[in-house]
Amino acid sequence: MTAHDIVVRGAGAVGMAAALALSRQGLNVGLVAAPARHSPDVRAYALNAASVALLDGLKVWHALPADARTAVHDMRVEGDAPGAVLEFSAWTQGVAELAWIVDAAELDLALQAAVRFAPHVTMAGEEATAPLQLLAEGRDSAARQRLGVRMPRQAYQQRGVAARLQTDRPHAGQARQWFRSPDVLALLPLDRPLPGSSFGLVWSLPDDRADALMALPDADFQTALMDATGGAAGQLRLTSERAQWPLVLARAEQVCGPGWALLGDAAHLVHPLAGQGLNLGLADVAALARVVAARESWRQLGDPRLLRRYARERELPTRAMGQVTDGLLQLFASEQPLVKELRNRGLSLVNALGPLKRALTARALDS
Image (cartoon, rainbow, N blue to C red; front, side):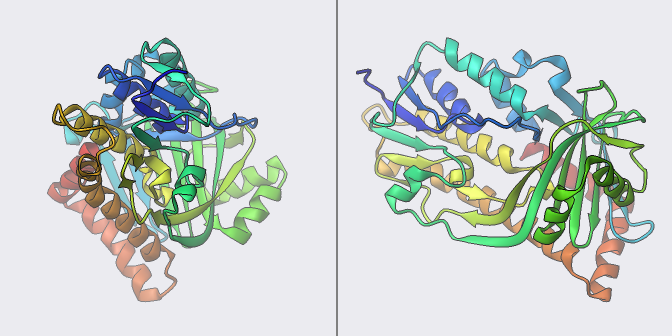
C-alpha cells in the first residue's frame, strides 16, 4: 500500500487542484475520486485573475483548448427599471480582461490529464489514510458528515438553471446580467459551440418557476429566455440539455481539525449571482498550499495549529463573500416600491461614479 502524506477526498476541480498544488512540494498525495457523473456538464465557470494564476502555475491553464476559455472584456448589469444599468470595462480598468469564462467539463479534463502525469499523485481507495486528509467532496461531503461537522444551510427556495446557448449576434466578450426580482439571469460569453456567438446560461429562479421552466419544451424555454433578456443578446437558441441545482448559503462550523481540513463547497456555499463559487474553492487551495509550504520543519502536516493558520486566512474572505451575495440577493428580491427605486438608482449612481466603479472592479479582480 502506498504511504501518503496527504489524502484528498473528492476529485472535482478543487480536489484535483489541491492534489496538484501539494504534490509540487514533493508530498505524496492520494486522490480519492467520487463516482463519475453520467450527465453532460453544461456549467461554465467565471474565473478571476487569482484562479487563473493558480491554474497557470499548475500547468493547467494553457492546456485548455482555446475555445474552452473566453475572455470577458466588458460586463453589463441591468436592474428591473429602465435606465438602471451598471457597466464595467477591462479597458477603463487597465487590464487585459475582467475575468475568464471556462467550460467546466474541459477544465476537469485538463486537471485529470495533469493528475495522471503528476509524479507524486496516485489514485487511492476509500480506505486510504494519511497524516492530513483534505475533504473536497462538495456540498454533500460524506467525510465531513462522518466527522460530525455541522454545516447549517439557509435555503433560498431557489434553483440555479444552467444551459448552453447560441446566438445570432457576436458576444464581443461581453457578459450580461439581469437582476429581475425575484430572479437573476446571467449570460456568460463562450466560444463553443460557435466561436464568438455562444453563451453559458446561469438563471437563478424560485423553485416553482424553475420547475416550470425545466418542464418546458426547448422552443418555449427559448421564448422565456427572449422575454427575460428582451433580445439584448440576440436570438438565443439552446444547444444543450438543461441542468438545475438548489441554491443555499452555508458555511461549515469548523473548517479544520486534527489531521483534516475542508476545501471548496465542502466548506462553504454561496449564491451564484457573483460567479464566485469556484474562485473561493481555488483560493482555499492556494491558501492551504502556502500554509503547508511555510510550515516549520518539525511540524506535522496534520497539526491543528498549522491548519488553523489556513482557517484564519480563509475565514474573512469566505464569510464576506457569503454576506455580499446574500445581501445583493435580498436587495433585488424585495418587491417594496421604495427598495426597488433605491436599488435601481444605486446601479445608475455607481455607474456614473468612475472612481467607485474602478475600485469595485479592482477588488473583484484581486479576490
